Image (cartoon, rainbow over all chains, first blue to last red):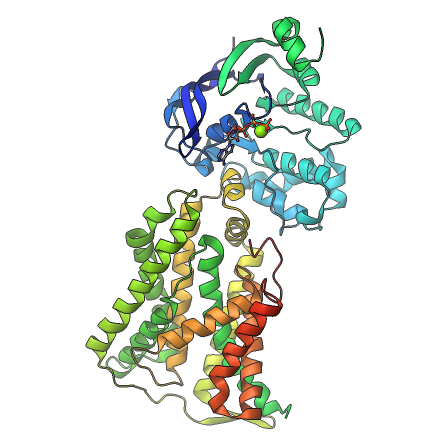
Length: 239
Length: 293
Ligand SMILES: Nc1ncnc2c1ncn2[C@@H]1O[C@H](COP(=O)(O)OP(=O)(O)OP(=O)(O)O)[C@@H](O)[C@H]1O
Ligand SMILES: [Mg+2]
C-alpha cells in the first residue's frame, strides 16, 4: 500500500467565531483519488481552504508526508506540491489566458518547464489555445473553469485539490473533465476532489469521505460507499 | 495656444507627476494602503540630493539612483517595523486600512517636524544645469529637461518591469486577488515587502528629480501627496499604466489651464479635476470594476 501524502488530524476551523469544521480527520494516500462529498454548507470548501493554506485551523494538525505544515502559507505549500483549483475559480480577470497559465508555474519547481507545460495544457484544453490572448475575465464561466484547472496543473502539483471542478460545465464537457482527472491521476498526481456529481466521482475515486455539518459521518473505499444505503439515498438519488 | 513650448512644459510637469503617482498607486493597489507620507519621502529624497551636492559635491544626476535605493531601504524598514503585523491576516481588511492610514499619517507628521528641526524651515535650492536649451521652437532649462528625461525613463522602466518580468506579473497578480496569487505560489508577504521598497524608492527618486529645479523645504511633501492622490483617482486605483497616463494628462491640463487662466488657479484646476472625476467616473478614466475592487 502506498504512503500517506496528506493527513488532517482533528482539524477544527471556521470564520471568526463561527466554527465550521469540528475535529475533522482524513488522509489521502499517494497516487490515489480521494473524494469529499456532502451537502451544501457542509464544510467541503472550508476543508480545501485549510489544506491549501488559505485558512488557518484553530486546532488540530495538517501533515504533509508526516511533517506538520500548519504554519506554512498557501504559497509555501505550493512549493511543496499542493495546488488548489478553487471553487469560484479565482482566475486573474485582467490577465490573458496565457498570462494566467504562466503565473500558474510561478513556483521554483515548475518555472523551468513553464513553456513546455503550457503547450501541454493547450493540447489538453484546445479551447484555451484558441483564447490564449483573451482577457480571462471576459471568458464564459465554463472556459474560466477549464482555465482554473489548467492553471492548477501548471504548478506541477503532487497533490491536486479540486473544488467542484464540474460546476457550470456542459454535460459533454463534464465527461471530458473526468477523463482529464483520470489522465492526471495516471501521471502519478494525488487528487482530492469535492464534487456534486457523486455518481461520476465514485467511479474515479479510490476512497470517499462524507462530510455533514462539519463532521465526517461516513468514510470507506469507493466501492463500499457506492453500495452504502445512506449514500445511495442522500447523494445518488437511489432507493 | 497649442504651442510646442507649452507641450514641453506640460511634459516636464506631467512626467514628474506620473512618477509620483506610480509609487503611490503601487502600494495602494497591492495592499489597499494609502501612503499619505508619500510626499514626505519625496521631501527627504530632495534633501538627500541637496546635501550630497552642497556638502559632498556629488553630481545630482549620479545621486538619483542612490537616493532611490536609500528610500527603498526606508520602505523596507517601514514594512518590517510598522506594517508587517497589520498585513499578516487578510481577514480584517477594513480595520487594516483604517489603522494603516493613521500610521502613515503619524509617520508623515513625524517626518515633517523632524525635518523642520533638522534642516530649518527655510526653503533651500542649489544651482545645477541652469542653462537654457533650445529644442526646435521651444526652450527649456537644462535641469528641467534632465528631470523630464529621468522621470519618463523611470516610468517606462517600471512599466516594462510590470509587463515583461515574472516578478512584475506576480505583483499584478497580487493586485487582482491576494488569495488567487497565493494559491499559484506568489508570496503575499514577499510581494508586499517588494512593493514597499519600490513605492518608497520611487518617492525618493522623485524627490531627487524635483530638487534639480525646484526649491525644497520640510513641508513641501503634502502638495505632492495630493497631486499623486488626484492622479491615481484619475487613472484608476491600482492601475499602473493609468497612473502614468493620468500623470501626463494632469501635467497637460495644468500647464494649458494655467496658461489660459493664470497661475493663481492652479490648485482650483487640480481639485476641479479631482471632483469632476469623482462625480463622472469614480472608477477612473481607465479603471475597470476589477481593478477598482
Ligand atoms: N467567509 C466566510 N465567513 C463566514 N462563514 C462562512 C464563510 N465561508 C463559508 N462560511 C460558512 O461555512 C459553512 C461551510 O461553508 P463551505 O463553503 O465550506 O461549504 P461547502 O460544503 O463547500 O458548500 P457548497 O457545497 O455549497 O460549496 C457554511 O455554513 C458557510 O455559510
Ligand atoms: Mg464549496
